[in-house]
Length: 412
Image (cartoon, rainbow, N blue to C red):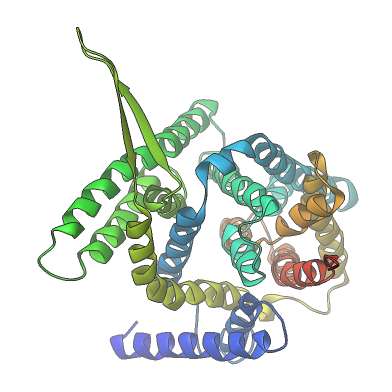
């Protein structure tokens, strides 16, 4: 793409995102819906001004990584750990149920081939953590107990999705799937998720010391952004989604994440070393990062809309609508039911179930891979696009309605 064309594309994306997010917000609709609609408007579905090219996708990836960095900074790791078992149950249920429902619909009702059914089931397993977090943030619910469970479950969903995608991709390319390779990928992911926040925490302490003695402005922002990019690269190298690198870096700068180390030397008393980011550092970094996050994260949501080319759908095909309708039920109820697999109040279960529904970019990756590899034909791909579009666009409205009907505390 020519440089001047890139400038034009980026200007269109940013202006469309801002105008439509502002417009829908005035009607009480979450701003992420405006950004998704902006993608449909300027993308191949309607005006065709912006295409899902590599450069714009790279900017979108930067946007979602920065958003996950912000999520990491706001995440109380100990509070997340307390809901860990619940997050794991919700994540596994939210992965297994849609997969089984999608696979069963494909094989039993539509008699599709085994590999095709596996790809369709895999497409339905995804939960877009970016969309979920943005909606909860728009509604002022990111710090609720159900949000902590959903964030943990969505992170695990991404990891399970990567494993499923790696397994299916290897099966397609090499005509067989190796359990050994899948085990190695699982080990790398586990090591990264355990060690990355610790190393990032130590790096954040060094950055804090450097910033306190910096002779020139901007050191904190530069070093923090470098750490985010470095850990995103490291995540990719270890077979983990790049956004997990941004999440790990965000945890490191969070004032809620502290490291306690017991050091015992011969003939001396044991000493306890405590490492943690100061609230002042977290506040300074948040103030400096916010303009970047608010600039780049809308690019991601616009590009999700751009990638949903609704012109690829054969709207006159009865088969497409029948398959899309059945898969939509499987996708919706498979995720929604995951909220009811843990012991919580009925309202919390419903909030978790609704928050797990958005598919977004992860579902598109599955569908696109199946289509490019010839596993999904045009009609199957079109049906999945309908499902992804509706499961991406409807949850913000459902969550808005749900939280809008919360019982108000009566004053005395």
